Amino acid sequence: MSVWREAVTLSGRYVTLRPLSRGDRDEIVAALADVGLSFATIVPDASTIDRWYDAIEEQVAAGRALPFVVLDAGGTVSGVTRFLRMNEAHRRIEIGGTVYAWRVQRTGLNT
Image (cartoon, rainbow, N blue to C red; front, side, top):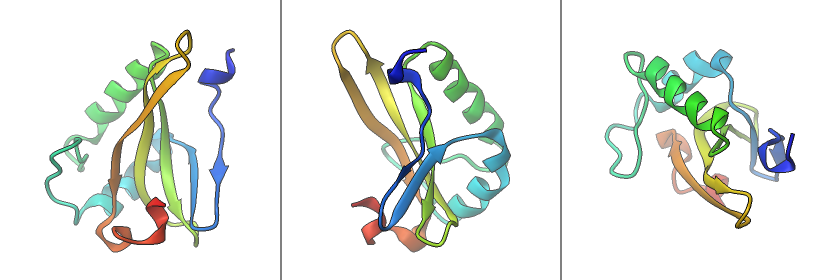
């Protein structure tokens, strides 16, 4: 497996990004329940999260994405983010598909 597709945990002072799993489903729904609409990405809720996971898993299988669950400094699920449009040949990724719980927006977590 290429290092580009290797799911790793990234930790910092305010946040930990760890590989997303379906086991995070309920905590993600709870964390994002108060977010509302987002112009930039889909905010999964209880009725859409399974389709959301399916779409992300297709992107991972195609080698185009690495999804992460975002944990705050206390280890509480606070959102999701992804490496997107990954292109190993051109050594390029985008960071996106990011949604945070309202309680952590405008905090050091995103830094």
